[in-house]
Image (cartoon, rainbow, N blue to C red):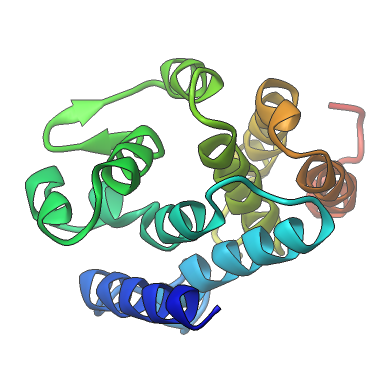
Amino acid sequence: MTHMCKIYNRTLLYAAKAHHGQMFPGTELPYVVHVAMVSNEVIFAHQEEAIENVDIVLQIALLHDVLEDTSTTVRELSLHFEQAVVDGVTLLSKKYEGRRFSFVEYIDRLKGADKGVALIKLCDRITNLQRPPEFWKAEKKSTYLQESKIILDALGYSHSYAARRLALRIEDYRQYLDSHEDI
C-alpha cells in the first residue's frame, strides 16, 4: 500500500505541474481537481470490483488529459512513466502532437483498449456529468448527454460498478437539459 501511495502522489504532482494554470471549466478550481476526481472514481470502483493492475490504471487516470490539454509530449511522458502508462494516456487522448480523432474514432480506439483504460473513460465521464458550465448552450448539453450514452454502451463492459454509476449520472444529468424530451 505504501508503494502505491508513493506512485499515486508522484503521479499527481506530475499532473498538477503539467496542468499548472489551467482551471476546471466553469469553476475557479485548478484543473488538477478534475484528474483527482477521476482517480477517486477509479479507487471507489476498485473497492467494489477489483481492477487488474490498479496501480497502472490510477497513474493513467491522473495523467489522462496531459497529452490532450498541455504541452506535454509522448516522449516527455515516457521519460517519467512506464510504457503501459504512456500507452493508456495516449489512447485516452483525442488530440496530441498534431493528431486529432473524431469522437467516433476515439471511441473505436477505446473499444479495443485494456479494460482499465476503458474504465478510466467511464470514470472521466462520471466526473464530467456534474452541473454543466453556465456558458454551455442547450445543444452542447444535449450532445454531451448523447455522447455519454455512447460511451456507456461502448465501454460499459469494462467495469460493471462504474457502468452503473455512469448510467445513474446520465439519468441525473437530464435535469440540466432545457427540455426534458427523451434523448
